[in-house]
Length: 200
Image (cartoon, rainbow, N blue to C red):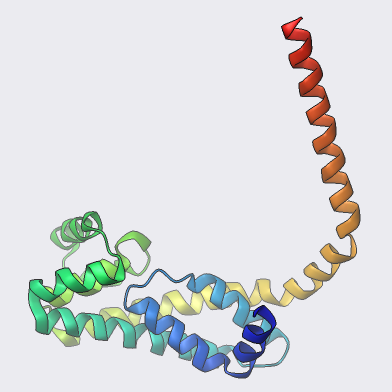
């Protein structure tokens, strides 16, 4: 399955990033950082452009967040409770968001992009509170642009070095494995000897 996924990801990288970040924007706990790293490897191999992946990630996050916001905006607190349970957002996260809103107001939408444990809850809370859609969109777009660009650039820098690093690790894999196993056995023998001495 992994080779198949790799081929599909490489052939449809922009669509894959768009779908994954849309789901993340809805509040599903997806590891977007790992997705960016995988995309960075494809970019380093010439299979995609950096700007294209960033654009797909930004569009996905904005789309998913706007869908979540709209659901809460139109459905109010009744639908809010159902949707947050569906995507796995805890009540404690919602309470934290309320405290953030009380302290920072609409700026919470921007700040939440950089505070993982309230990120998803903020989208739905802002909708249920009937925050002005245009204001929500501006804060959301600004935060998403900064967040995705920064993470993708970081992943790209690491991704360029990853193939060479993996090659070196695999080339020295046997040596590393034997070293770790030897160290483990030595520690095990020392501990056994020490316990036996204490018992005596």
